[in-house]
Image (cartoon, rainbow, N blue to C red; front, side, top):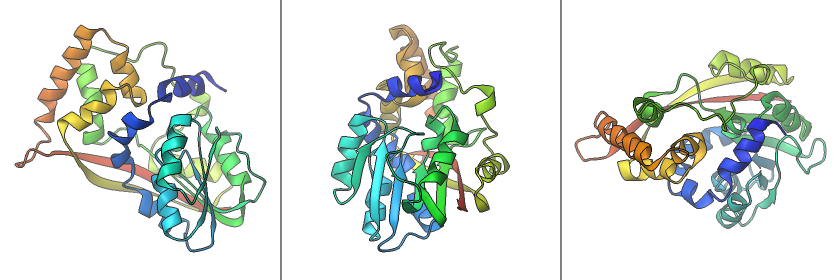
Length: 268
């Protein structure tokens, strides 16, 4: 396990409820496209890796698939098991999945590759458990981020806050360009065939209170950055956040945040 992986485990410990009430709705947007990309249909054996609150697993069950779902965080497993009671939900951490070679017809991972220290090794593991001819589909956040996703980071930057030393980034040799070409190349390097990568664009509709609740609770990297500051600095970040929200508030007082994700898929 890399220093990045260890940091991720600490950051997400016990955060399932806070995630479910803040960022989970945002992350649910690509789910139908992910399932379409791997051709989900009744009776297929499907693995959802990094299931989080179980949105993908529940949707796959809804299409009649035989679903297994894993996550590295116990609190997420508890929520996912309730969301997808028909799924086989287990605690497991990439790149060590508790499944045999070629066990699944399709594997999906919604934003999970953003949270592993060795993305190439993780993809190799996804390929291992996918049968020949099966399909893999994964999503990540792109870089640079879309305007709505960048809002919280802008507030942190405006307060003069950088990334704390206790939150390591990926090692340079493990990272890759977060672009359509870079993401497609990552799947190609994992020996997937007929790789396609698309950019998904949507407006996430929320409220300033809901959007701030995630980082205020320490959810994700942005939350860890916020929570590691003094009370005075957190108040400064919140002040900048409130001011910047004015750029995205519509006539009805809804916070409309433009987002983008990269979705790549290929065949084993």
